[in-house]
Image (cartoon, rainbow over all chains, first blue to last red):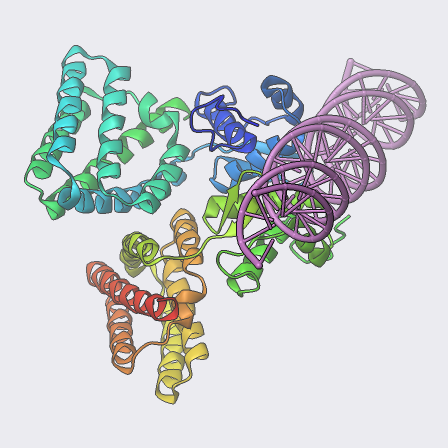
Length: 223
Length: 223
DNA sequence: TGAAGTAATATTGTATACAATATACAAATA
DNA sequence: TATTTGTATATTGTATACAATATTACTTCA
């Protein structure tokens, strides 16, 4: 069988395919609105249609694809309305994550976040967008995992996945960027104080502001 | 093909199958921990394995099933820990729903909820469990739809689906039932006042209490 | 030239077929 | 009798085949 080809090997082919196709979409290989021809993907991934279709159904459930009867799957595009729907929900979830994380996080985890925070601050001062967003994402992931609630993590990631590139491609204004950094300073402080309610409030505000940024980016990109 | 057999006909066979299998599980035809043999289901639903498997993958994504390599799907059972994970997330979502609904709900919708509320109160005084839970569920659904956020609704329903029977099979204590009714009185009042924060707070509290009930029921059922 | 209709092709949705793994049963041994 | 091991059956995971719908290209006619 899968003779320890990969160390964990808990993934069936279908799951690998799901992740692979998801990546193709998030990386922009298939832009919003475009069709996903099964033949092409089968050849590209060197698999048959059956596991590919199972993967696509899963991605449709996650909201990344949409099936039209007899017309196959299309990548769903984000509208401003979609963003207005998504962010409040993400805000509620990340806010809960913050509340839980504040009481459950270890000193070690706080230290890790502190490292990421200073990395991010450095990228900020240097104006390096991509690395900044990477550190940013890592911090949010760490908070999520410190909440010790996999259900919450899954629900959040599903929604965050729909934002895709938009969230990070968004070219923040200088002011917005400074503001975001200030919010992150507050986060770190609230975490160090294990102040759940305060962290929850900050995160909700943080996401609300990020929502504005993404919407502006969307409006600018496709007016 | 589907020549207007059903008036809307927006569902592909696969989606119908998904709903059908989901119902089978929630109705208890396949209890938690039991396997879902493809042959049986194929015969029962009179379809081939391909659409069935697509449906099962979707249900696995929703968290109702779990696939083991080469061993097929099993219905996942709820543990007390799962409930402790699920309810805070549902609380955050329903609380957000309440906040949004309070500001967006129409007088007509409030009137509908009021009708359901009095129906529910009647069932309560008569001690009719099943109809009570039905009215209860309808009220929560109406609040959710008044929030005008399909993303939120979907996310919530996914989680609520995992609670399944447990939530309604739970035999509340007399005291708890009285308390739940009181909470619903508060909800209606907050809705009529369009008081979002208050409704949000009530719903969070309501779900927190319901969590306790479900956990006690789970502990009692399988100790 | 352009529009409309029709045939050819391609793509999708479902069913079946095949290979690999797991389960069940029976026989053999201690 | 209990345990183990070999084989037969059943079930799963993937690939292919077939039928139905959509898309494209071409022909025909105004």
